Length: 283
Image (cartoon, rainbow, N blue to C red; front, side, top):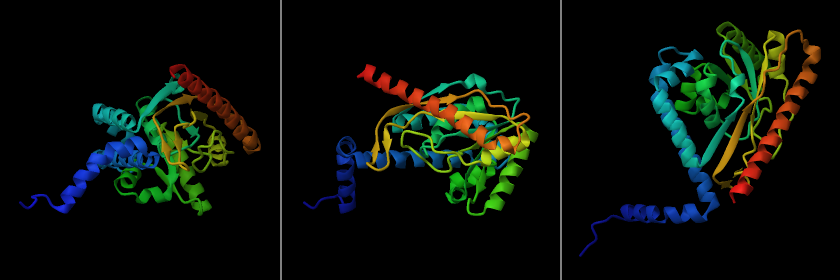
């Protein structure tokens, strides 16, 4: 009797059958599967929220309206996505956020997974826009939704244009009392430290005389792009007290940058050490 199943169906059934084995035994498979699920989550979420951000295009308050409107759904999505990829978040120092103040927010940047941590903070942080690389603008629903929500996309090769866009963004931050989130390292770095900072964020803060708000993500010890390792893990996100720039001039630029980086580096090592101790106790 001829089989009623086609070769594609048999192949699919076989693939589904060996999925648990591959996930358990292959670091590489687990690494790519988790990132696939994560990016799929981001695209689905952005697609769902597009009708909301279309109401007020190019307005950073879109992010607040979207999260307010889909509060329960968005919260579940965020927790579910973090649960799928196996990341637990702990927020510290959230009492430092004052939504009646505007800030230049700076943080270390280790992975695209930072977005999930930012989602965890958004209910308290609320009105905030982010400086991102221009290529991200062309990533389908995510890029379009981010552009509609007022994110600032810059081309680092076009320095004058980038400076103009960031200056305009800072003016909106002051006018609307929002926050501008910048990754001053300029690139992702997950090697157990924080790279030297580029000066753009500090120019903006000093020129506008608005505070710097440092945010530190502890080390992603569970993630390694070279060995394709992506294990379950925990991340501590610490918000430090804001650093005032009142009375500072561009002569204080280097000192301000180094002071902020050193404060963040101390917290980075301390929080990462705490997590290692927690893991050892748990084991």
